[in-house]
Length: 506
Ligand SMILES: NC(=O)C1=CN([C@@H]2O[C@H](COP(=O)(O)OP(=O)(O)OC[C@H]3O[C@@H](n4cnc5c(N)ncnc54)[C@H](OP(=O)(O)O)[C@@H]3O)[C@@H](O)[C@H]2O)C=CC1
Ligand SMILES: O=C1O[C@H](COP(=O)(O)O)[C@@H](O)[C@H](O)[C@H]1O
Image 1 (cartoon, rainbow, N blue to C red):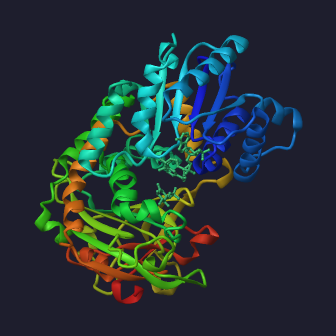
Image 2 (cartoon, helix red, strand yellow):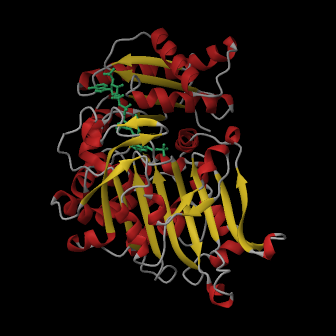
Image 3 (spheres, protein in one colour):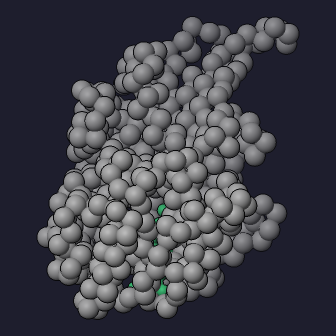
């Protein structure tokens, strides 16, 4: 791998501390960093290199489960880190940063390849990109890359504006948009599951699949992010990006080649084939919810509107469920159901593929074989389970569902940021969000944003600690389906799912 300098804007912030330093540390432990490598952190507060290294060390100790107290090793890692205080809105500060970087490149024989990672508020993205280009930093002789974090815009128009401002200074191939769901190992595994297993490849279409359910439920509430979240809601925070990425990865056809370009083309075909929603039809296919008070894991939880920093009359969605149709040959007639919510019963991201059940009529009514299910467990347990029907040797030879499962060993599973940063260092954009994908997702979501802001969709309150509003169950019942929920023993490592009907769950 080429030598390079990693320049982190927002080095004193939360994301850097919790995700970026631990990821760089894990890459260091695995010998995945280039030999000639330096990290420059920036923030407004003053700090010496030594203070910064102590900050990085503390972050890694707290957030990487692989921290190793070997002082030589720690020293070798921490010496890569340097700090330059600056205000990113001040053009003259970029000259100071450029000189420090150039000096380090000369001392360490590091080629002038630079990755700029923007872990700052999105309003600063355009300013930073322009100052990089127009300052001494812009005259480097090597390659440059820009890593940015979501949110990529607030709606279609602001996303387009943001993209226009970045593209004045960076080409699309130089921009790496992190959607951390694309860094999750089971999401990266989807293409292998679908395409490297002939048995699944044969069945992966509307001839055999009855419906697809994508769930990302969380037990946490809005936490300390009310300022951001109350303007974003679940639709912008999770649905427009992470969940539509999961949908694209699940529904894409096999690419001609497994290259970033071909995979992206297949993903874009999926989002383009999504049946558009008219604003007046949103309420038929989309359920909007907000959590009320309740209990989470035996502890009381306040209502969203009583959370610190939230408007007491807020209509912000903390839950969204939707029915989507992909109008192409492969998926025509198969509903995709997506839901995400905060303060729900369990933390779980999973994709459930429910297969058609043509044998149902062949069995006596009391047997009623369950449909085959393929469940891809993305988070917090990574694994795959497959539900089949089997005759119980005792119990009057009753037919009952059995589950075959693979559960990954948590210690072997790398963090999303680790995989994504490694790809960015290598220049592989397969698991980053390309602008076309982002734009098409905003286009599809825009009528929902409009309908929500015009209050054309009812806001259903749901009790914290439940599976969300009843209306989300009705959405599936209208089509003769129901959500497949996680078995309550999931925390103990059992990854089976159970059918939970509305009456049993509320
Ligand atoms: N935290 C998370 O888990 C996630 C965050 N994100 C995104 O990542 C980005 C960063 O988030 P987060 O780390 O939480 O934010 P924080 O508020 O914790 O950190 C912001 C950082 O920006 C720096 N900064 C702010 N203004 C300036 C300025 N004018 N000049 C120089 N530096 C400045 C701050 O430095 P200082 O205070 O020293 O001035 C600080 O290091 C945001 O875009 C967020 O949406 C995305 C997904 C998850
Ligand atoms: O991007 C975000 O994701 C987290 C959920 O991520 P996960 O990896 O824990 O599933 C969510 O809590 C947050 O609101 C959102 O901004």
